[in-house]
Amino acid sequence: MTITKPLSLERLLEEFKEDLTLVNATPLSHQLAITGITSSSKLVQPGYLFIAEKGIANDGHKYLPIAVEKGAVALLVERLDAIPQGYNGLVLKAQNTRLLSPQIASLFFNKPSEKLFCVGVTGTNGKTSITHLIEHFFNAAKMPTGVIGTIDHHLGSKIWHTEMTTPHPIELQSRLNDFVQSKARVLAIEVSSHAISQKRVEGIEFDVGIYTNLTRDHLDYHSTIEEYFEVKELLFSQILGQSTKNNLYAIINRDDPWGKRIQPHPRTTQWTYGMDKNKQNLSNDFSFAINKMSFSGAEFTLQTPMGSANINSPLIGLHNVYNVVAAMAAGIAGGLSLHSMAAVLPQFNGIPGRLQRVPNSHDKFVFIDYAHSPDALENVLLALQNLFHQFAIKGRILCVFGCGGDRDKGKRPLMAAVAEKYSDIIVVTSDNPRTEDPLKIINDIKVGFQGNHSRPLIIEPDRQKAIAFALQEAQPNDVVLIAGKGHEDYQIIGKEKFYFSDYEVARKLLA
Image (cartoon, rainbow, N blue to C red):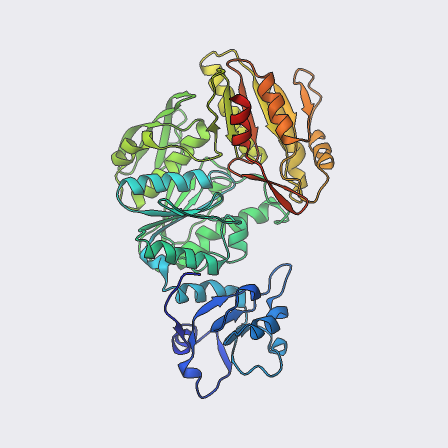
């Protein structure tokens, strides 16, 4: 936790006078200084405020005795009957501690998001690419940008590793404070549906929200895709509108059918973006037309409220054109010029595990990609297939993929159908099986194949052997797509993590 000034009881009660009830206090309570806050009993230290949060699978009230034993000077609870007998520290009561946790964390860390231009990106696909593009544009403009997302948290060369796309609000606010203390001026953060549902980003004062798309994913958590959408929409209809910032922007992909349904908060300015298909979509605020696409990137024309420009992007595929346009819209909202962004885009080095090229001397096009949903896999395979057709390259697409265990089982056969549609050779393997039997996961995947015998199907549960087979089978001008894990440098088998990097495995096999 970042070191910050202690939080006084007076300041806490003043800020949350309508939400907190002071249950017991001593004559010295007014002198109380809270030196840290946490909702994890494992992290409690003397002087801390312990917030007992009710989660989906756990209840922080069970851990109050541990927090007290470790020296918590104050407790924030929903249930007074859970307080250990004999505790003589400060007790605060709230109706919903989970709702208050982000706000209290923001206060404790001196409201860091007020000092940053904050861009939140949500959607099934594209979040990581867009946040890294935003970082590239603002860094080039001498506006240091902190990034929070799937790969890591980082500001410049400083990196914090993370287990979650969007962390718990206390960790999140601590990280924002780290950014502020390190002179950051911009925040680009991936906002997952889990984070919105669990109120992790409620304490952030956003300037911009970006919506990319919505396809089937996380239905092990959300009961239906409609519920999944409703959660995503809250970033625009509710969270963005709660911001104390003056100029708010909702940047929406209107080519996505779900994007057409988003109703941003009345306080926001809505900018839409999409493809100019024979001048049918010029009503979009950011409208693009493709001029050329290749294995080296894409060239397109972009019309914006601030004029037009010809854009040369080093990123491959139509889906990445959407990502670039969304990031440029955020840049313009933050005061950057369209032409300055167009000038620095060719120097963008890409994102680890997002159509990441594996260099080799065998004239094979080998890519690592994080695609782990049917839509993401289709976007990547279709982009590669279209490049073959456009340049009349006589090559095949070999697709290596699996599906994660203990996650949405319904998408497994859908992934198979996509792979079969766009690939010439399919190698089904393990992803992160977790506590499921890898062969059971593979059998679930196989249900989606339609028996197209022109598409050879290889089953190899050992991921390294599967990658080796595909690379050996590939001929010059063939494409090998190794999908599903992207930047991850581990494989979860059972409840253990083992070091495993698709990129490193492929590099060694191609050496």
